[in-house]
Length: 379
Image (cartoon, rainbow, N blue to C red):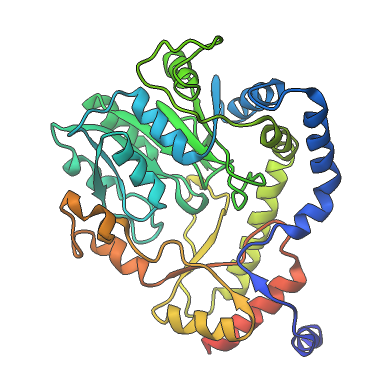
């Protein structure tokens, strides 16, 4: 107890929900070495580092193919283009997700449709999926949000029976598992983000599609490169510029070796939160017994969220809300006919959830200080 009192006397510097600088101190030598190696190689785009990272990350995800692209947004868009979406085709997902999950459907000529979420996990309520399918439904995007997988068995069965495609959005779930199956290995194609905040994050935008389908792999490799294969000759009517560059691939190759340790550290931080905050008025994350949560973020709920965040801010602690506005209520998507009240669980949760600091280099000293500060505010 004296230890904690001393912490409060010292008043630690600003605490944020995410910070990469402490991690960089440890890994800086590797990062700079990777950059130097690329600069000295003479190849900056689609070289050996990209190929190696594609192969190793696909293998990590128990998949045969990996296609590195500019971002997870592009990964989603290009994957749906490869499925040949036409105007009027519907793709079902959730409204409690990042905007790119849904904007990529629109960009690929599709029409988004939404399923409400499970109030305990904030993931797709799979029991409501079948009722949302129409004769216009072309596919489903499940979002393994916050680091935990959707209950996949029922989704897989429905998609196979209905003959519609299934995409896993794994942008927040690197290394997560569902019944010992790793995220990204349970669908037609899966997308990952390597944005800096992610469990496996680089130092800029980057993404990947993994798949076991050779046709999807071959098509995506052309789509990401102007519709071309090896020479400067387009063989597709459409093509885009969306390539994972050598610099990011080289950095991510080094970080991939640390991925399992990143997840172990995140789970350890989560365990401390769970132990220290279980007697408070917060609703803590629910890890399903069939899942291994990789804790991209540690999301809690409270009816007085905004008041709590303001009080923390006054103490130089800055947290995050993932996500404060359900997508179906945003003006940019109103043309699809959704309105407030359509997804009651999603809308209720969005007003109460917020994320606690969660990143591997968040040390015990800072975490205990943060927890005690939060507990004082909750009293």
